[in-house]
Image (cartoon, rainbow, N blue to C red):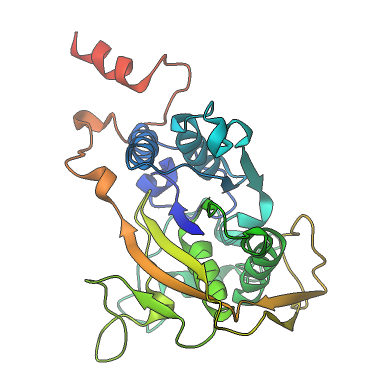
Length: 306
């Protein structure tokens, strides 16, 4: 399997520097152009996606749609005529609770607490206060996604053409997805392409290889190792509360299928080749909300030059 973990394009709230987890922030014009370039880049390098998953929030879904649009949908040999964007609530960003839509808070100079922690202490007694989604809840969501969607695709591969899967989501939740996926693999089964480093001594640990710019992607090659034992299982118990309810699986217990018979090659970290020589439009236009009523992004800019 070829696997791509992709962050959405730039949003209005990214530019405004406000918290937008489950808040449905739209893409900027610049973000829409980023997504369009990503789709063309993938298709230009010969990638033909068999599965395309996305968060149901518009910034991720529209980025995924931009990828879908460039795929050769009439290529029956690659089954692209059946390709659809599968939008899932379970792939949403961390829920920031009370902080949704509020500006980022700078660290106070007179306190060892972050601005958000100071803000929490000031507002936690507010009747509408809701804390951020826990790490345990996000880990559970990602394990449910892996077991209900990704692992079955891996097990369906029988030696023919491998699947090519894209998952378009959000920075924080993608980091949790990456770490949860790593835990399904046996120790020593992960290698890195030349030029990528991992380990101690100030070098990024494997678990934290992620770090997604807008439309940046983590590219992975997952292969079955026929010399390894068959898949094992294990259980992860649910936390006491989960803000978001995943679609298919029960949140009581996630039964993990451990991929003991697979190995992983990390090929690209925060891939941004599609953004080479790509610059923001001057005059603040690029930071504006993308208007779908325009016939095309290119025609929008052409009109401004007249």
